[in-house]
Length: 184
Image (tube, rainbow, N blue to C red; front, side, top):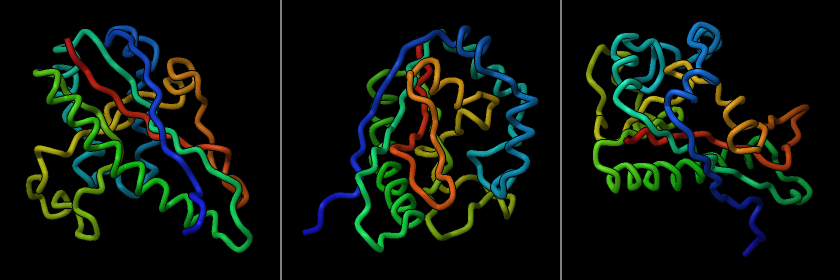
Protein backbone atom coordinates (compact mmCIF):
# COMPACT_ATOMS: atom_id res chain seq x y z
CA UNK A 1 0.00 0.00 0.00
CA UNK A 2 1.36 3.41 -0.92
CA UNK A 3 1.69 6.24 1.54
CA UNK A 4 -1.28 8.64 1.71
CA UNK A 5 -0.88 11.80 -0.35
CA UNK A 6 -3.10 13.90 1.93
CA UNK A 7 -4.91 13.93 5.23
CA UNK A 8 -8.22 15.61 5.99
CA UNK A 9 -9.16 17.33 9.23
CA UNK A 10 -11.67 19.95 10.31
CA UNK A 11 -11.19 23.26 12.06
CA UNK A 12 -14.12 25.27 13.35
CA UNK A 13 -15.12 28.63 14.75
CA UNK A 14 -18.26 30.15 16.25
CA UNK A 15 -19.79 33.54 15.50
CA UNK A 16 -23.18 35.14 15.19
CA UNK A 17 -25.13 35.35 11.96
CA UNK A 18 -25.31 39.12 12.46
CA UNK A 19 -21.50 39.41 12.66
CA UNK A 20 -20.99 36.99 9.79
CA UNK A 21 -23.40 38.96 7.63
CA UNK A 22 -21.99 42.35 8.64
CA UNK A 23 -18.35 41.41 8.18
CA UNK A 24 -18.34 38.83 5.38
CA UNK A 25 -21.40 39.24 3.21
CA UNK A 26 -21.08 41.27 0.03
CA UNK A 27 -23.75 39.88 -2.26
CA UNK A 28 -22.96 42.08 -5.26
CA UNK A 29 -19.22 41.29 -5.29
CA UNK A 30 -19.58 37.61 -4.47
CA UNK A 31 -22.37 36.90 -6.94
CA UNK A 32 -20.46 38.82 -9.63
CA UNK A 33 -17.62 36.33 -9.09
CA UNK A 34 -20.11 33.46 -9.18
CA UNK A 35 -21.33 34.64 -12.59
CA UNK A 36 -17.85 33.86 -13.94
CA UNK A 37 -18.23 30.20 -12.93
CA UNK A 38 -19.57 27.55 -15.30
CA UNK A 39 -22.01 26.38 -12.59
CA UNK A 40 -23.86 29.71 -12.31
CA UNK A 41 -27.55 29.01 -12.86
CA UNK A 42 -26.78 25.38 -13.65
CA UNK A 43 -26.70 23.78 -10.17
CA UNK A 44 -29.33 24.11 -7.43
CA UNK A 45 -26.60 24.93 -4.86
CA UNK A 46 -25.44 27.89 -6.95
CA UNK A 47 -26.95 31.30 -7.67
CA UNK A 48 -29.09 32.85 -8.70
CA UNK A 49 -31.24 32.32 -5.61
CA UNK A 50 -34.38 34.21 -4.64
CA UNK A 51 -32.93 37.17 -2.70
CA UNK A 52 -35.97 37.50 -0.45
CA UNK A 53 -35.82 33.81 0.51
CA UNK A 54 -32.11 34.12 1.33
CA UNK A 55 -32.77 37.15 3.56
CA UNK A 56 -35.59 35.28 5.32
CA UNK A 57 -33.32 32.27 5.80
CA UNK A 58 -30.57 34.35 7.41
CA UNK A 59 -33.06 36.24 9.60
CA UNK A 60 -34.21 32.96 11.20
CA UNK A 61 -30.84 32.26 12.84
CA UNK A 62 -28.70 33.89 15.50
CA UNK A 63 -25.58 31.71 15.55
CA UNK A 64 -23.17 30.28 13.00
CA UNK A 65 -20.58 27.56 13.37
CA UNK A 66 -18.02 27.71 10.58
CA UNK A 67 -16.18 24.57 9.48
CA UNK A 68 -13.01 24.33 7.45
CA UNK A 69 -12.44 20.89 5.96
CA UNK A 70 -8.70 21.15 5.52
CA UNK A 71 -6.77 18.93 3.14
CA UNK A 72 -3.08 18.80 4.10
CA UNK A 73 -0.93 17.51 1.24
CA UNK A 74 2.09 15.30 1.76
CA UNK A 75 5.14 15.55 -0.53
CA UNK A 76 4.16 14.00 -3.83
CA UNK A 77 6.12 11.06 -5.19
CA UNK A 78 7.86 11.49 -8.54
CA UNK A 79 5.44 11.30 -11.43
CA UNK A 80 2.33 12.13 -9.40
CA UNK A 81 -0.06 14.50 -11.16
CA UNK A 82 -0.80 17.39 -8.77
CA UNK A 83 -4.12 18.17 -10.49
CA UNK A 84 -5.31 14.58 -10.14
CA UNK A 85 -4.17 14.46 -6.52
CA UNK A 86 -6.13 17.67 -5.79
CA UNK A 87 -9.22 16.31 -7.59
CA UNK A 88 -9.07 13.03 -5.65
CA UNK A 89 -8.43 14.82 -2.35
CA UNK A 90 -11.39 17.17 -2.84
CA UNK A 91 -13.63 14.23 -3.74
CA UNK A 92 -12.65 12.44 -0.53
CA UNK A 93 -13.02 15.61 1.56
CA UNK A 94 -16.52 16.17 0.15
CA UNK A 95 -17.46 12.54 0.91
CA UNK A 96 -16.41 13.08 4.53
CA UNK A 97 -17.67 16.65 4.91
CA UNK A 98 -21.27 16.49 3.67
CA UNK A 99 -22.46 13.55 5.82
CA UNK A 100 -20.76 15.06 8.88
CA UNK A 101 -22.36 18.44 8.18
CA UNK A 102 -25.82 16.93 7.71
CA UNK A 103 -25.38 14.89 10.91
CA UNK A 104 -24.62 18.12 12.81
CA UNK A 105 -27.73 19.63 11.26
CA UNK A 106 -29.85 16.66 12.45
CA UNK A 107 -28.34 16.91 15.93
CA UNK A 108 -29.43 20.57 16.18
CA UNK A 109 -33.13 20.57 15.18
CA UNK A 110 -34.10 23.65 13.21
CA UNK A 111 -30.55 24.36 12.04
CA UNK A 112 -29.44 24.50 8.41
CA UNK A 113 -26.12 23.64 6.83
CA UNK A 114 -24.48 25.71 4.12
CA UNK A 115 -22.23 23.48 2.10
CA UNK A 116 -20.04 23.70 -1.00
CA UNK A 117 -20.61 23.03 -4.69
CA UNK A 118 -22.96 20.07 -4.91
CA UNK A 119 -21.78 16.78 -6.42
CA UNK A 120 -24.74 14.63 -5.34
CA UNK A 121 -25.86 13.86 -8.91
CA UNK A 122 -22.40 12.62 -9.84
CA UNK A 123 -22.01 12.45 -13.61
CA UNK A 124 -25.73 13.08 -14.20
CA UNK A 125 -26.38 16.76 -15.03
CA UNK A 126 -28.22 18.72 -12.34
CA UNK A 127 -31.99 18.77 -12.80
CA UNK A 128 -31.91 22.59 -12.69
CA UNK A 129 -30.77 22.50 -16.32
CA UNK A 130 -34.16 20.99 -17.23
CA UNK A 131 -36.15 23.31 -14.96
CA UNK A 132 -36.88 20.38 -12.65
CA UNK A 133 -36.69 20.28 -8.83
CA UNK A 134 -33.54 19.05 -7.13
CA UNK A 135 -33.17 15.25 -7.08
CA UNK A 136 -31.60 15.36 -3.61
CA UNK A 137 -33.48 18.06 -1.67
CA UNK A 138 -32.83 16.38 1.69
CA UNK A 139 -29.07 16.54 1.18
CA UNK A 140 -28.35 19.44 -1.17
CA UNK A 141 -27.51 22.71 0.55
CA UNK A 142 -26.54 26.08 -0.93
CA UNK A 143 -22.96 27.13 -0.57
CA UNK A 144 -21.86 30.10 1.52
CA UNK A 145 -20.64 31.84 -1.63
CA UNK A 146 -23.93 31.31 -3.42
CA UNK A 147 -25.75 33.47 -0.89
CA UNK A 148 -23.12 36.19 -0.90
CA UNK A 149 -20.51 35.26 1.71
CA UNK A 150 -16.78 35.86 1.27
CA UNK A 151 -15.28 32.48 2.19
CA UNK A 152 -11.72 33.75 1.77
CA UNK A 153 -12.30 36.36 4.49
CA UNK A 154 -14.12 33.84 6.69
CA UNK A 155 -11.30 31.31 6.37
CA UNK A 156 -8.60 33.90 7.02
CA UNK A 157 -10.24 35.72 9.92
CA UNK A 158 -12.45 33.17 11.67
CA UNK A 159 -10.66 29.89 10.95
CA UNK A 160 -7.20 31.54 11.01
CA UNK A 161 -6.36 29.55 7.90
CA UNK A 162 -6.06 31.56 4.69
CA UNK A 163 -7.24 29.80 1.56
CA UNK A 164 -4.41 28.67 -0.68
CA UNK A 165 -4.65 27.83 -4.37
CA UNK A 166 -2.62 25.74 -6.78
CA UNK A 167 -0.17 27.81 -8.75
CA UNK A 168 1.76 26.82 -11.84
CA UNK A 169 0.50 23.25 -11.53
CA UNK A 170 1.92 22.85 -8.02
CA UNK A 171 -0.09 21.93 -4.95
CA UNK A 172 -0.05 24.31 -2.00
CA UNK A 173 0.66 22.83 1.46
CA UNK A 174 -3.10 22.60 2.03
CA UNK A 175 -6.48 23.48 0.54
CA UNK A 176 -9.78 23.92 2.34
CA UNK A 177 -13.55 23.69 1.90
CA UNK A 178 -15.51 26.19 4.01
CA UNK A 179 -19.02 25.34 5.22
CA UNK A 180 -21.32 26.50 8.02
CA UNK A 181 -24.18 25.51 10.26
CA UNK A 182 -26.71 28.23 11.08
CA UNK A 183 -28.61 27.66 14.33
CA UNK A 184 -30.29 29.27 17.32
